[in-house]
Length: 297
Image 1 (cartoon, rainbow, N blue to C red):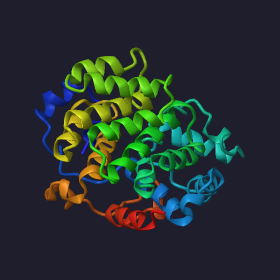
Image 2 (image 1 turned 120 degrees about the horizontal axis):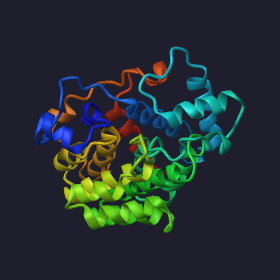
Image 3 (image 1 turned 135 degrees about the horizontal axis):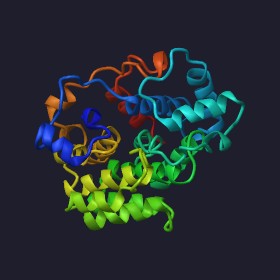
């Protein structure tokens, strides 16, 4: 839903579409977020709790580093990781590049929370294992926060409990922790939240702490209601495909499939593989989710 609004401001979104209440266009294909989440889900299904960063690096090398035809829609952090792996670096060095703090792990981390439902510590650990290949520092912390939050949402935690799990997963002195605090304090005022989170004089919108703060702010403002949380994230713009996906993951884990409007869930088709190719092409997110739940230790 957020893809058409990616990199736009809240004002530009409102001017073009008015109040966001659903899909902004008829083109409802997935994004790179979708494909990387599916890729991480496959790794969990292959290795379970025994997943290591070496497993992740080997899979990236086999399926992504050797891929021909480019990575349409991929972020800087993922492209930097591919180049690091191609040059022979291994985790954690492979994740130490100029975009290590991006939201590229946060956008795929929900699958770890689904797999480790009810165990936020394990969910955060698995997210860090996955993230060490492509991210470092704040990029990992934000992913851990998302994974932990989804984990407790899967086991019935209320909105406050979901947010508390995210806060517990982020180091107290981290930028991610401060962004989550801002989400709690300012969720009722999107303009104030954007003002608090957006880094001035920096050209890109993919900062992990910012994305986490905006996504959790939308989730809190909607009190966990899926139909409100996702449009709220889209309406704030910035890295809107990612923030809306995270807000949707939190609300979806909280309410289950029944919480998602049928006209939205019914429009979800198979993964196209546009970004990552055959390794994920044809997969269905609902099927992957069912498999992850079935594989929960």
